[in-house]
Image (cartoon, rainbow, N blue to C red; front, side, top):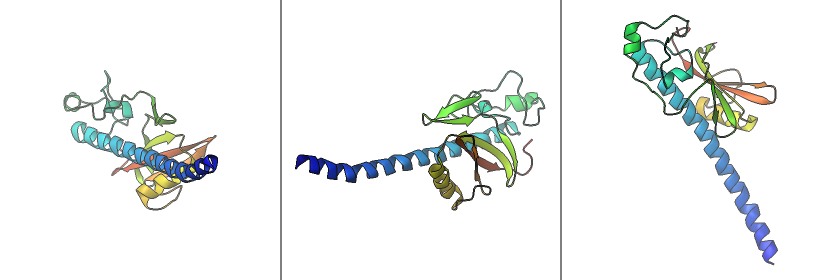
Length: 166
């Protein structure tokens, strides 16, 4: 009798907890993209250029450059008010104990903008995040785009810009 009761409780509780954990994970991805996007916007407002990589959001290198490889002017460097995010960022960083965020910011043409890429989320997660941000699932359009690279999904969040973001 006790075994049957435990089995019934397990059948009810496990799916509920699992679903909430998945939802929390997806919400944390959206929040991470929002935080990075806000940091990039604040950096651009202060410096006047977009950063070439996410590590510029935590500290300005000795010889900082813009996205086009041109050294920042003295006044642009003086206007830096970072750090713009609290997370330590190097060439990549681990997010949610299993995914990797690439610090390199890529230029995107459709929509025009700059992209932040996360490797690792499963297909259900990328679909759900796509719906949360874009309102629909479409692998190749909208602010969230994704592709399968090897055994991982590469989820890219595109921040709209007016041009190639130099």
